[in-house]
Image: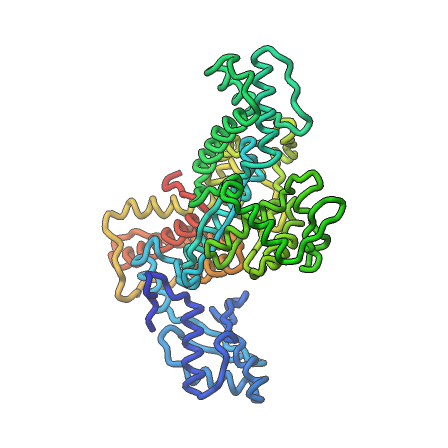
Length: 550
C-alpha cells in the first residue's frame, strides 16, 4: 500500500482502510459505490479501532444477509495493516489495527515531521476566506479577535488539506462610517486647538481618535483647521489601518489581500453592478428608491440598493465586492461575519443568483458574541463610549497562545465565555498551559538524550497498552485535520490536541524513558518525538507556538 501522496501529503488511515475494503469488494465481484464506504471510530475501543457499516448498506441493494456480505469482505482482505476483523450483528465490520502498523506510523511521523497531518484532499480548489474586515475607524476589540482567530485557523487547516486558500481583508474605506471618522477626528482636533468640540451622536469616541487628532496638532499646530473632512478621513484611515495590521501581526494573523471598498468605486465596479442588476429584471422603483427583488430568491424581504436621495445602501457595494471575488476565479467564497450579520446571508445569496452565478459557492460563517469574565464577573464593554477591551489589551493580559487557544476552543455558532482568570493560570486547569506542559516535558526528556532519533526497524520493548492508545491517536491526526476542514470547525483541533496531551501525561507517569537499555530507550524516544511533532503540528494549525520549557 502506497501511503505517501504525490505532493508530500499523507494518506490518512481512514482512506487506507477504505481502499482495503474496496479491494476486497472488487475481489468478491460486489458492485458498490465508493462514497458508501464510511470508516468510523467507535466510541468504545472494544468494538475495534475503526468500524464500517458497508455490509448493511450493500444488503439493501444485493438483497443478501449483511452478516454474509461482511464475512465475504473479511475473507477478501489481505493486509498487514489489520491485525483482526470482527463481524458484529447486524453486520458491522470492526477493524483492529496491527501493532506493526502503529509502530510504522511512529517512523512515518518522525520522517515527515512538520508535513505530517497534511493531505491533498482539497485538490488545490481555490478558496477565498474573508475575515475580520473591521471598519478602519478604531482599534480591534475582542469580537474582532474571535473572527481573526477563526478565519486564520480555518485558513491554516484548509491549506494543510491541500486547498488553495486566499486570506482576504475587506477595507470599508468608503461610506458614512468613514465620513463620521473624519468628522470625529476634526472635532477632536478643534478641541485641542481650543475650539468647541461638537462630536456627532454617531461619531467615534475612542481614545485612539483623540490620539490621532493630537498627532496632527503636534505636527501642524492649528494650521489644518480649514482642511475639509476628506483630509482628516484619509489621515485617520492610514494610521488606523496600520495599527490594525500591526495588532493582527502580533496575534499571528496575516492576509494575502487587503481589498479596498473605494477601489470598487474607482474602477466602476459598483456602477456596473447597478447596470447588471437592472438588466436582470430583478429591480423595481418604489417610493423613489431602487429595490432588488430578493424575495424571489429566498430572502425574507426585498432590499433597497439606491435610496430615494440617490445614495447607495451598504448592500450595493457588498454585491459588487462579492461579484469581484467571483470574477477572480474562486470556487468557494467563505465570509466570516459577526452575529449581527445573520440577515446578510439570504440577501447576498439572492444577489449572487440574480447575477446568474451559483449562490451555493458562498458560505457564510456567523460567529456568536464573546463575553469576558474575570474572577467570575462579567467585564462590561462599550464601543460607543470607548470603554472597550482591545485585542492589544487582551494580548498583554493573557498572551498570544492563551488568546489563540481560547478563541479556537469553541464552535463558532456558540456564544463563548472568555475567562481571563483561567487564561493566565499556571496550572492544569488552564488547557493551553496543560498542553504546553506536555510539550515542555517531552522537550526536557529529548534534551537529555544526546543522540538523534532513529528509525526503528522493529519495535520490541513497548508493551504498555496506553502507548498503543497514544499511537492510535497519533495515527488519527490526518483524519482529524480533514474533518476540521470539511466541517469548518477549528475547535476539533483543540479537542484533539488536548486529548493527546492528556494521554501523554498519563503515559509519562507510567514509564521511564531513558535507561541503560539502548533498544528500550530508542523506541520510547522515537514515540515521544512523534508525540511532540503531532502536538506542535496541531498547535500550529490554531496559531500557537508552544513553550519548550516551563
